[in-house]
Amino acid sequence: MEPYNVKVITYPDLTRQYRVYYRDVVYKGYYREDRFKNPFNDKWTKTIKGDLHKHYEHTAEVSMKRTKSKVYNYARCNNWDWFVTLTFSPEKVNRYDYDECIKKLKPWLDNVRRASPGLSYLVVPEKHKDGAYHFHGLFSGLDDKQIVWTGKYVVKRIKGLGRSRFKRTDEKIYRFGSYRLGWMTATRVKEKDRVTSYITKYITKELCDSSFGRKRYWSSRNLLTPLEEVFHMDGTARFVLSDELGECSKFKKISTVQYGEMTQSVEIFDL
Image (cartoon, rainbow, N blue to C red; front, side):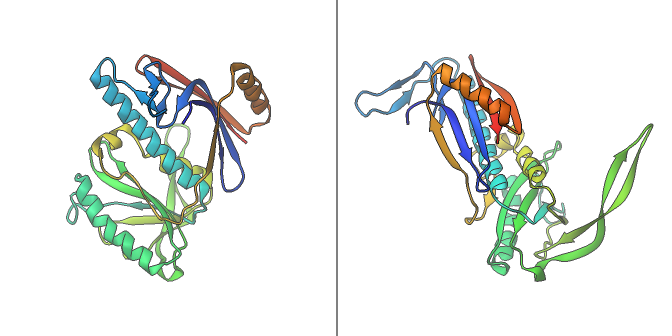
């Protein structure tokens, strides 16, 4: 794929995100001076130069960003009913062992799916500062017979002058799927943008380092994905595009990422 510097992402609700890059980028990585086109097969090739450790750090960062992008797109493109948190009891699961947590969680997820044929889900792990794991998920299409109110309500912390206080809300806490590995909470999704942000932020560098070579999220096959289009525009055209998008976008930001000696900036516009 030829280098590009503008990406347009169209979501199922027909909203769009424009990404205007400062430098050219190529598929599966950033376009750099050490990339060249092989004259024999017309493909882009990269040679590794310099510090090998920095190369692996770059590879790990690209992998993390790719995972975050996948999770974000799945979360944003689909409608969700439930935000779920799943923890592990130390008597039943070694919650510091990533592989064991996955091994125990997978059968439960399969049981929920069998009981609700129309189920959609997206599940990601979160790693605590002490190294323990628990999981968060977005679900929809659950059979009503599976959903049980726990008799509890969400309690929120309210910050005030001098000290904070806790207040019980009217938001109910539910459970489903006979989860017995620890405790779970399921609350109704009220703002999709907020839960999209929540579920994406759990994909951290620490998590990716500890789960190297293993799955970092679980998703049902019926999830919608966005349409992505890429373009190559000269500097003048990109300037005009950024100026026009800045006037009509509902959200915009500039993100700067350092890859070794290369700085890549991208302007992001949501319409």
